[in-house]
Amino acid sequence: MKIKNLFSEKNVVFSLEVFPPKSTTPIENIYKTLDELKDLKPDYISVTYGAGGTSSGNKTCELSSLIKNKYNIEALAHLTCINSTKETIENTLKNLKDNNIENVLALRGDIPLDQKPIGDYNYGFELVDYIKKHHDFSIAAACYPEGHTESISLDKDIERLKQKVDCGTDYLISQLFFDNNLFYEFNDKINKKNINVPIQAGIMPVINKKQIERIVSLCGASLPPKFIKIMNRYEHDKNALRDAGIAYAVEQIVDLVSSGVKGIHLYTMNNPYVARKINESIKSIIGSVNNDLAI
Ligand code: FAD
Image (cartoon, rainbow, N blue to C red; front, side, top):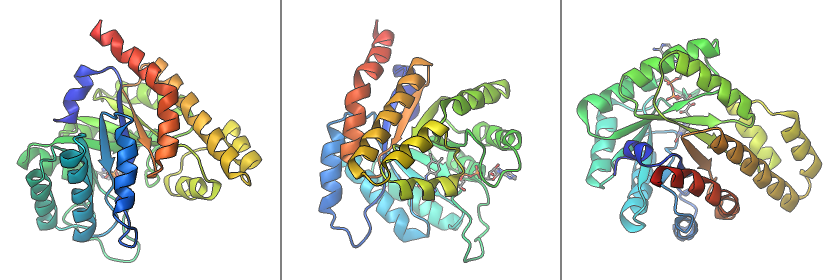
């Protein structure tokens, strides 16, 4: 099924994100993770694409295929282009299609620091444009409520986003954020620019202070005082930090869903316990909003 169609069937689309296991991790671990995530009945599961060429693409395809064909859950394969030739991208897309995958998250990827970019693709919109013109996938793209780290301003970034959407993006998934007001302001701004495709809000629960600090330094998300207080107060108590992180994410989601967000995309970090706890607290809320459509 094409994920873009879910947005007309549901008021809120709920998805989970996983990453392929490292080659040193036994494959059984991902089966265990997926067994648990399946019980949460997500609308789809997305699979990240590691930095680097063909081998990371194969892993994404392999795991997406497992999700789609063994677990019978819709799969969204991430695909980055900055590090790939046109030929590699075409082969990856064919491989996805051969594995019954109908959904791609088209990304530029981070510019590699240690090698010269290949140059076949320089921006995400070029990949969206290529897929739209040559294939029949439902196409998602990334957006940044606080602006992309390389962008000189949020307004400029939104201008570029408009171009990416106009090339054939069916829906957007946002970068993680911890301050819902920034997401609402972003929505108002993009609506004014006639960007009207559905957006799923990207939510990442904090379960480890170091990990969140590293991610935030990479993506530039701002940390509200309430969030910093939680991290500082419980940083040395693993379970307390995890539980406070879960509670914070739940509060964000309840507010977003009540405010009419079209979707929630949970960055699970392959941690089914956290995903399950969050799901337990939000399923009746998402269910209630989706029931409104059925009435
Ligand atoms: P673009 O849309 O190309 O934007 C990148 C920058 O270029 C922005 O600053 C934009 O303003 C600017 N820009 C765009 N168009 C133009 C133009 N025409 N002229 C000049 N400037 C322009 N990375 C991975 O490696 N693997 C993953 O699996 C992965 N999954 C992700 C999932 C989500 C939901 C998100 C939000 C990000 C993900 N990323 C992933 C990170 C992403 O690859 C990086 O943020 C990357 O730096 C930007 O990718 P993009 O597709 O958003 O780029």
